[in-house]
Image (cartoon, rainbow, N blue to C red; front, side, top):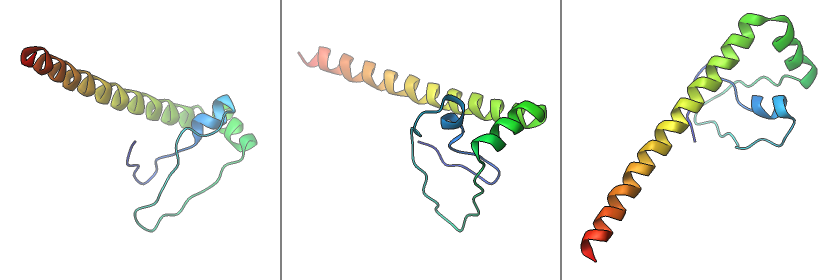
Length: 88
């Protein structure tokens, strides 16, 4: 789905809506990962507005990326449908 870089976070959606993670993660190089408890995460959201802004910007970036992929796939589908229509 995505390649994350230094300082990026994953798994935060599961902390917000308390559902299972929607994706897994695999490191491509040596990686240092920190686990934040649910209580710690709630503290960060509530008491550190700068950190909350970072998380919100991360969400926005991921949503924009997902939207771009969907747009691209829709365009490819339209081309394929048009080609199929022409052939028949």
